[in-house]
Image (cartoon, rainbow, N blue to C red; front, side, top):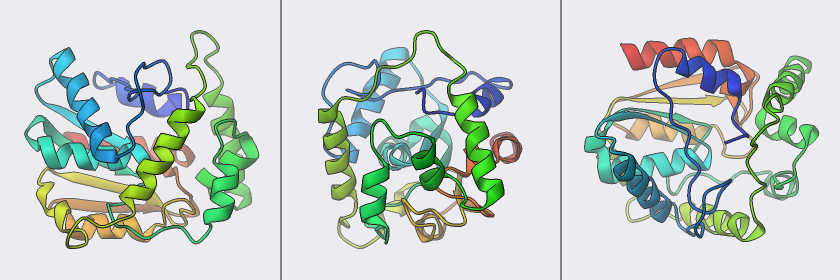
Length: 236
């Protein structure tokens, strides 16, 4: 949870209750990290049931966006609206920068790695990355522990499994029938931006926003603008 930009979470919390959730084996959450996205989605269901949520808005970023898709496909009656950021559908296009992404996306990634992966590579994009990095480290008390190596490897396995289509490519997206906002940067080097277009084309009630000169995490690069768009979508 400490990887999230507090400007986003605090901004959303200004108008609604926000629940941040670390899946099994991640952060301070116990248990073993599942090796498929669908199993991760069932842990979300267990969490939702445990705290008694009946209807809620769901936001997922990156692998969390994959989990949010799998959850909504299976348990869509509990989701009012869905926001997917910097993510891809099952069977989506892999990155052409796999070697560099693997090298940079480490558990101890610093600002240079995060800036290359998550932000636009222009001067303004890198400036936004430095500002995000400062916000990200503002909280110094009760921080999440680093993700364990076994959990990282389980996430890698889940990501590789997600690359394989299950039957007709993208057909399962038709089962997501809630209003959906898809957002990404114009050059996502981790999960190519074309995947966001696939999501918008195959989820029946989806709309798409592409942020200019941005990478994998456009909501961290343009937090104020993203909050305006998210609030408009959620309250419309």
